[in-house]
Image (spheres, rainbow over the protein chains, first blue to last red):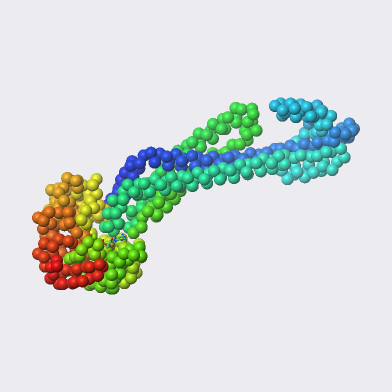
Length: 301
Length: 225
Ligand SMILES: Nc1ncnc2c1ncn2[C@@H]1O[C@H](COP(=O)(O)OP(=O)(O)OP(=O)(O)O)[C@@H](O)[C@H]1O
Ligand SMILES: [Mg+2]
């Protein structure tokens, strides 16, 4: 036990000396790790948030039946009557051509020349339908019943929009993943270099250790610990940054009308904790990898 | 204790530093390695510590064929071998005590062994009163005694010394030789590479002379030339 404590003391002491020796490199490595793992953490949270939001919409979403511009008034009323009486339908809302134009006007407020191309007459009127149930599959089959009706131009369910959003998020996830990988590689290389410098600074000690028969793992351990400690520090800084950013962003979504769409993007506290933990672990892994590579490469018997 | 069977060492495909050497050194012997600069003395010592592998032939140390032990076992081999150099290789930021203790700490010896063995060995080399000094506060002879203490603190079977008196004046060199002789007296095999004619002639021990990597003379109670 005394021996074990003696050795632990040795490792702690040696690691501390290493860290003090090159402070600027240390700070650079920690910050790079921090940025890299922060991105991983945020990416993970965005992933959870989008999954949560998509799940929510899939349940509560409505669908819209667009009518042919040439549809006769009687046909519109008959369809409306049928929808209102349908047992699976909660309520409906009729959108006239004029209301459709107003909605379009809002959307194209910055592009008046586009709006000029559109006449009210060419726009379809529509029924917005809110079903009684929330399951995406059932909404889909309900909507399908109206697709082939005379006078119906098209039926758009929320699923199509949700699918489009999901696709968008998938490509977003890939970009985040790619950036995380690049930054993780950069952090690993920085830690690698830092440990190389540390080993060079201590080459005399290493030479003596080899001479008197210290094992390779004994010589390497302080350096690997140092790398892991940097990784841990970077991981913690990155995790804190990710947590702060998440709060900011959620607050922004809550406040801004433009970003109201994103209000469904929330993570549960257990998802948040998982993402934060993953961020810290990622930092430690990066640190361990970089230093283990360096210690392996620059230390042969 | 050390046996070389037809050993050749060729550096980077050209320099034949050791050329077909066969040599048997028994437990407890004191052997001088002599020969002009570049004759292969240091290389021979590095073959014994497995710092360099033999190109052909076999090196046996303490009963083990070095070409057959894994690199993971090399540190354990070195725990049986103490090494001393002309330039001492002391760590300047550690005290005398710490330099010697370092050798035990890094091979994982428990604290109580360190606290009993280090003072004992410092007593043996006559430096108890300097244990808190740093290497640059010591004379060359004292520094060499610290490095001998470090090499011997783990009680190795073999002590290899590469020109240990090379940087010292004759009187100090004599002191170092008395110390090595005492260590040899405890049963430790000592191999010393040297250019110091006076010392070799006065000690009258086994002398192995090298020339261009080959053994040209091997006498039980030899002289320098
Ligand atoms: N690491 C090395 N790489 C290449 N050649 C080397 C290396 N070490 C030694 N040599 C060469 O091997 C030969 C023997 O060198 P070695 O150091 O063994 O001689 P030595 O007898 O110890 O000489 P000295 O008395 O000057 O210390 C020399 O020609 C030297 O240049
Ligand atoms: Mg030499």
